[in-house]
Structure formats: C-alpha cells, structure tokens
Length: 342
Image (cartoon, rainbow, N blue to C red):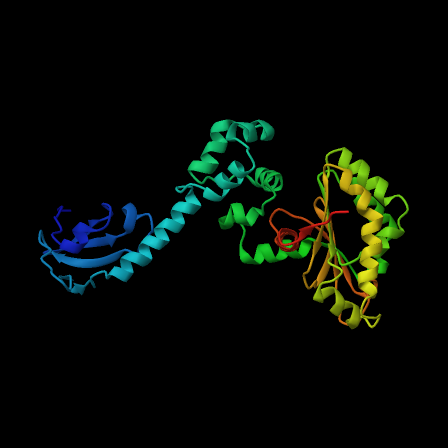
C-alpha cells in the first residue's frame, strides 16, 4: 500500500490535532482513505467517513470534493455540537474539576486530608475527586453526600440518571398515613429520642406536642448534648393564621389563641443555647417535623384539622431529592421568620 498525503484544508486543519486521512487500501490508481475529524483529538468519537482520493493529492475547497465522494464542510454549529459532546465525555471521564464538591467541602470547613482520613482513603484520591472530577465508588459517594448534607445526584450528576433519581426519591417514603393521628406514638417517641444532630419543627400550632408530658425536658436534654433545635410557630396576628382558623371553621381567633398556648408551653427552652424559636407569617401547605435524616410531613387540607390530614414518613437517601425538597422549604420559612422573645 502506498502512503499518500491529504491536502484537504479543512480535513488537515481539524480541531486540536484531531483530523487527518488514513490510507485503508489501494484500488488501482485511487487510494481509499478514512477521513476523520473530531474535536479534542478525536475524543468525541466523530463518525469516520471513507472517501476515494486521487493518488497523492486531495485538492479540495469549500465543498471538500474528494475523488468520487463529497465531504461537506463542518459548520460552526457542527463544531459547537461536537465540542459540547467532547466536554460531556471529559466530565464523565474525569477531565473537569468538581466545583460542587469543592464548594460543599469549603463551606463546611472540611479539608481533603480530613475527608480522606474519615473515609480511610489516600488524600490524593480525594484531591482527584475534586480537581480531576473523578467519581468515587458508590460506598464513598453515599458517605460523602450524607456528611456534606448534599444529594448524591447534585455532587455527581453524571452517575444518577433521571429515572434512578425518581426511583430513589420514591424509596425515601417509608410509610403513608391517611391521617396524622394514625402515626404511632412510639414512632414519635423514637424520632425525638434518636435525634443527635437536629430537630426542626414547622407548624402553626402543633398543639398535639404540648400533650406529650416530658417533651420540653427531652428537648432541653437534647440541646444540652449539642442537638440543634429550631421551632417555627405561626405569628398569631398574621393574615395566614387568621384565614386558616376561618377555613377550619373554628372561629377567627381560635388558632391565634392556640399559638399563645403553644408558645407559653415551650418558651422555657429559649434559655438553652442550641434552641431557637421563631414566628412566621407563611401560608403553610405542610407542617414539617424533622429529626436528623427522618421527617414527618403533615399535609394541610382545606377545611380539615391538621390531625385529620394525611402524613408521610420520610427517610433521607443521598441520591434522592424528596427529603431535601422539604428541608429547603423549612429553611426558606426559617430565614424569613422573626425571633420569638418572651
């Protein structure tokens, strides 16, 4: 086989050295070549196109007419599309830094060395996860996502498909209760007792909590052990609270009076350093009761008491986003609420 030189300007030029012609086999006076052009050195895997070139010469111009075949010139949109594909493959192959992971670590004051020690891996491995975008094994992804309180699909979007994320989010639902008062008392007790990081409660009143004789003591002990406790009650005078009272058919000021009762019941907790109580003016669609990575979501139904409305027991999974959706909602209400002062 005789080697030939392709003088095709656009084929020879290519992008980042990823273009050229390869001789495939001789056929009389013509030598059939495989012309290829792919961004970033062929990383995108562009299709190969076989054309017949006159021996030793490939004299073409704008239409790239080579022997008996015609190769269309690549447009700017072709280049852009191939470049996007190449960048996507680079990300999957670990060629780009993982800025989401970097930011999550920095915002929590966790160094790569510390994370490596906690995971039992080499610090260079963690550095590669950050700077080269390498994807950790699943067992490490789960631990890192939980430690950073981030979704696995947020930190490594390439490894969790939309279908899988939907399936995982569905798996976060532990049980559905047609009415909140069907939630077993022993479940509430377990959730309060087992919390070691945070307890977040968003309600208008949460009157049923005042009926648990030792709840204030439990919360006080939890706070003394470093558990962060955030309690959000409705602002008694806001329009949302008054309208909710009217909608339930219990009188204009009934819920406001119940809020006064609830705040009086829990106000002694303000003295604890890790307890904060705030009042909000938000229209609530759900009451939320979070205990670390578990939560009870109590839906609000027009004209019905909260105790008669459905409740869902959730448990957070690193690759899911249902649990996180409700924690984001809590944070949004919390940030707009005012501090309760006795």
